[in-house]
Structure formats: C-alpha cells, structure tokens
Length: 203
Image (cartoon, rainbow, N blue to C red):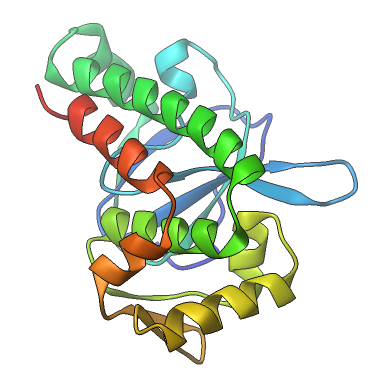
C-alpha cells in the first residue's frame, strides 16, 4: 500500500480487513471544521478496521496509510468465517483490540500531560516498531496532524531530537540512529503501550 492511500470513508460498508506487514496505518478522528487527530496507529501488531470484530457493518473512522509497505488484504467474508471458528486468529484479534483500547486511553493522558518533544519521540518509536524499520518517510505536516500540534512545534521537537543524536531527519525521511537516546527522550507511555501489545499478542 502506498503512502496516503485511504481506506473507504466512514459509513461505507465493510468489504475487507487489512493486516499491515511493512506498512503503518493511521486511524484518525475528523472534526466538522476539518481538524484531525490521530487516535490509533496499526502496523504488524494489528489490523484495520476493528469494526467486524464488534459486529459493526460499516467503517466508523478515517484510516490512511502513513508509511508505505506491504499489506495483506482479507475479504470480509473470509475474515468473519475464520473469526466464527473461535480459533487462534479470533483470540489474537480480540486481544489486539483490547491492547488498542488501552493504548488509546494511555495516549489521551499522554497528550494532556507530556511535552511535544516527548510525544514526538514516542510516536517515532511506535512507528519504528510497527513498520519494523529504522528509516521511514515522514513530513512535518503529517507529524503535526498525528500529534495534533502546529508544524512549528514539530519542527522544534524534530530538530532537538536530531541535535541530541537520536534521529536523522532530511527531506521528509526519518532515520532512527540511536534508539536508546530516543527512548530516553520519550515519556513512559511508549514503554507502557509497547508492553500492552506484547502481552496481547503472546498466546
């Protein structure tokens, strides 16, 4: 899937479920004035949408590809048939949703309590984990949308992380060069949410 590719719009009937492998999907809430806030990121740890697991027949959120990569697309009927068996996929899907709910709750608190720099570091770490790569494309514009802050704040945070030797940021391409430094610059929310997904996906 290519970067900025969008899933069907909210209200559209479900036709498939996507399992990102090397891609990362962003789930965003869109307000009436056009403002957006990221409410979830999905990579190798999950799937989109979650609606078929909770028996919702339509897309309820806006989802688009944030980092390009491979995605396994499963027809909705095949996914629902497998879920009905209550096998391993069903268990993992349920636990993944539980981890995403916990993560969403944690990030609400994170957005209220932590600095833009900490949140930026946390987001970059989460992206690295989900795409399984140290380098990925990312613009200031997209990062500002994901963090719900102005581009100036993102630019300052990215510059500080680069000066500190944690990342290299050039022409819309981010490279994580020192993960321990990036973890140190992040808040505790990265470790807390990472642990939640690790537990959820271990049967």
